[in-house]
Length: 234
Image 1 (spheres, rainbow, N blue to C red):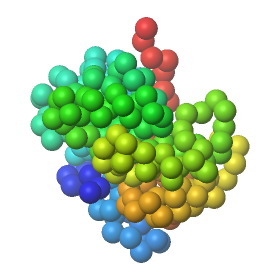
Image 2 (spheres, rainbow, N blue to C red):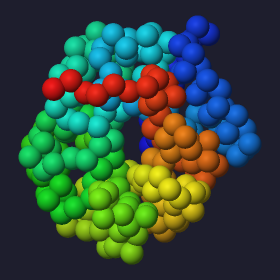
Image 3 (tube, rainbow, N blue to C red):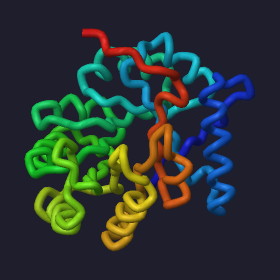
């Protein structure tokens, strides 16, 4: 089930957050979709707690991080002080970080190889937790990018379910930066549909409206909410 944004954003939301919420509502209206069917993931990577707190205060409850170690350093205190927050891992996952990832995150968007499946299956059983799992599809087949090639997606999803016993929630993709995103979103949606997957993690700051038109259930928006990123602290 989609983890929708259930807490209304306050009228005095920070400018970026309010603008993104308005754009999501507009895109949903054009697509004749219920805005509640789209979960906004506020991507807080590289931002410290003092930058995140105003976004939490405005009503945002779902956040995304790229790295397990960075999230481990700032989110336990935030989630303790603000019950009901949901944390999504949207960056690559190494199998040796699976234990920490399952303990910390409510959703993992980067399932893409057998070693990750094995590690996640072990930790899910051991910890008794069940994060939402998304298979990452490399729709552009870019060698430098993580993800399963489109032609291998059906076989991989079947293996996740049948061999590793993983409950796959949906698919995630990141289109090539130099190509129109819509065909990549459409391809991801097609793969999801034929595999009976309802959730689609698609769209970032520059293209989330297009992603919503193509069926995205989760959009990952960072710079449009938080502003320009700084380099992560060592």
